[in-house]
Image 1: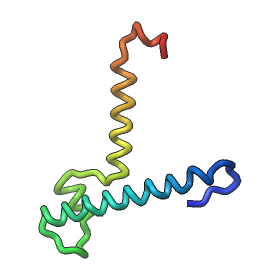
Image 2: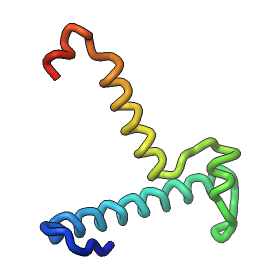
Image 3: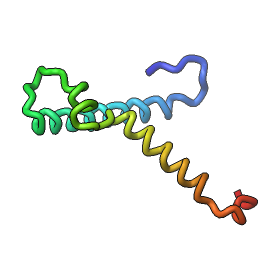
Length: 86
């Protein structure tokens, strides 16, 4: 990942890169588990099986969904008497 013209990215870019590598590793484990469950070979496409048969989200979408759920829950379950504190 290359960020041009932004100061202070020397600290941030390696961390983002490491995070994407971790996500790829988790996705790889998820794919291996799906192949094991569905008895697919190593080189068969697993993306459609994850989505259609197992109803599993890819890791990036799963993270986004979880963050959206947390934000939604925190926004809509706050007691209205405490909104002035925010």
